[in-house]
Amino acid sequence: MPGTSPGMTSFTTKLCSEPDSEEEFMSANSALHIAVLGGDGIGPEVMAPALDVLRKIEATTDLKFRFTDAPAGANNYRETGKSMPESTVRLCDEADAILLGACGLPSVRYPDNTEIMPQVELRFHFDLYAGVRPARLIPGVPSPIVGADQRGIDLVVIRESTEGLFASMGKGVVTDTEARETLVITRKTSERLFEFSFRLAERRKARGRVGGGLTCVDKANVFKAFAFFREMFDDAAKRHSDVKADRLYVDACAALLVKRPWDFDVMVMENMFGDILSDMTAGLIGGMGMAPSADIGDRHAVFQPCHGTAPDITGQGKANPTGMILSAAMMLDWLADKHGLESAAEAGERIERAVDKVYADGIKPMEFGGSNGTADIAKAVLAAL
Ligand code: ATP
Image (cartoon, rainbow, N blue to C red):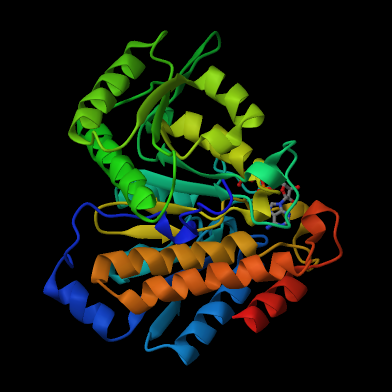
């Protein structure tokens, strides 16, 4: 929906509009303390340009940042036997926000053969129930969907991130003859998730989104757990009658997303469905390297690109840092909302405009067949700021 875009910085919202506490407000008024977890593979490669962008914001606004690096991921596990040290968790707890590159390597695994995923552990530890995965087609970026260049794509997948099928992580039971994993949907998390989602849809509407709304994506026709999920969505919809509320089964939703992605605004779904559909929506907007994300709770939030560690291109200067840079913009928007910092919201929008300009000017990441690597894209965004 070109021309009616609410902009990428309307992807985060919180449940109350006042600063959470004087202590947090004070912290925001001095320097914003950012925990920086570069992680593995291309994680540190895309993190460096995002930090350069934030340093440029710092140099040109009244915002001040204090960055603290911390180890996490597969390399840390290989060296120490832990996905991350206690000190990293403590830092994440104390910081105003957490920036994360990417973690995990297919070649490094726990004894049960699962990968090292501190990013998932942080979701559970800090109760980051709302996984916000925006997919906006930046003008100039090719989409595999016919007509997307004319109609535009500007949607947000909200993936519940602490329960669903992932509640079973590490708890699955496997015998010689069968394997079982259990899906969990709770009222406590679902109600907060729907509240968050309706508020985000309201905020996007206030920022100019025309014809939008919130779609609940589930499989309520087959599973009782999803019927329960939908029932709570319907209750929340009654409290937010200003937002158009739709319901779709996940299979029908997948088909519609590739046929008419421009019909979607905000979508909310269970963890596993969101894991899959958010990778698909990242594909709709050019590729994994374009897509930012945030995992948001009531107090903490982690901002990281949608992509993984991409071992196939690590160390070659090919990684597209756009998703990481846009994640930093989302972080500023969240901090703005949390602490009432107008200048942080403006800075977030400035970063998005700079990214848009770079693509309008014709930059083409190697990710989709162009010749521009990490350094070119980083330099161009900094210049456009
Ligand atoms: P995970 O399970 O951690 O999400 P994955 O192996 O499924 O990881 P990615 O690591 O995201 O997926 O990589 C998928 C493909 O996308 C790879 O071919 C990778 O090179 C490519 N890719 C991912 N991120 C980027 C990026 N920032 N720039 C360029 N290509 C990328």
